Image 1 (spheres, rainbow, N blue to C red):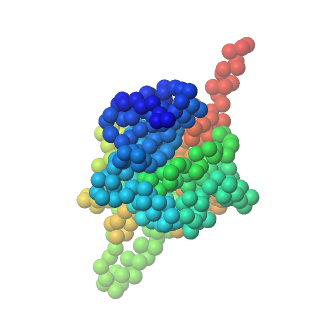
Image 2: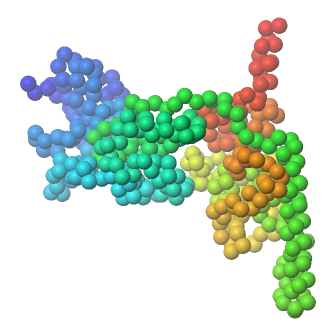
Image 3: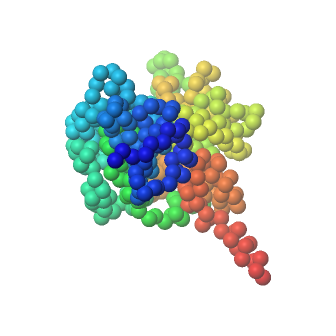
Length: 408
């Protein structure tokens, strides 16, 4: 028996509130003829696209797609049909011919490069972390296989947080595979993240380590100046053109201002590399992180404290007036890494297990220990939710002590 049909302008709320009946029924979209939702007596709701009478393609479960996403997918199916193609055949070809690597290289990576500021870095990380699945057909990536892969990461010494991060990357790519029609439904929709410690201790400089890193920055500056002075003396004797005298500058090179700015603003390394002078507002004592350069995609403003403001003023004076970016290499180009100089600095300061990203943790941790509230820290770091910021909560225990004192 043909199910009952209802024609209406589909909305997310309408589909959510659609109740199961004793028999299956369909809700058809009047905004896009061909898109429908079938509601089963069990309450299960599934999107379909009917591209001609009696011929339809399953888009996926209601829980996996918003109405907007389903409508966009239906438009693609209808476009294939109206252009003379067979949507069912096209779909079968997509699913059988595509390995995970094929899908990534032809579809996902181009999309990722266009939509994420760290696209190239994310691509390399993904090829490494998800290498097990590269030669698999998309349809063979199933929960059992993924669970074994994730468990293996834990057994190899990775933390639950790391395993979750790798899993999230894989899951996100498969979400797009479903959205773009390469998979009928999400194979990992019922897999959950591993439990993690939300208050995981973060790495930051101890007072002694901060003194040592600052001292080594000064020693490094003195060493670079001495080398420049020696080189110019050698060139003077031979009547060669002299290099700039570093004694005229506050900083010998980029590393000291870059490290201290990061410690005082909590900026990510990529944000520091991409920071432009047009984003440094001396009149407002703040820097602006453009949404296009931020991990969250949202613009934020960070006040400059006295040390950071002094650094920016002094660094501006010794940079070329036409420089676009705040920090550039010897060729005037934007940095893409400073691993060698950073590693050498840590070795000289005898500091172990400290990444550049930990400068960001240092900034947030020091704020928490000084009594800054977590919401302020969240805003300064650019976190969209409290989840990431909560890792600093144990450092601001003063408010807990004050709370329990209220009982006395």
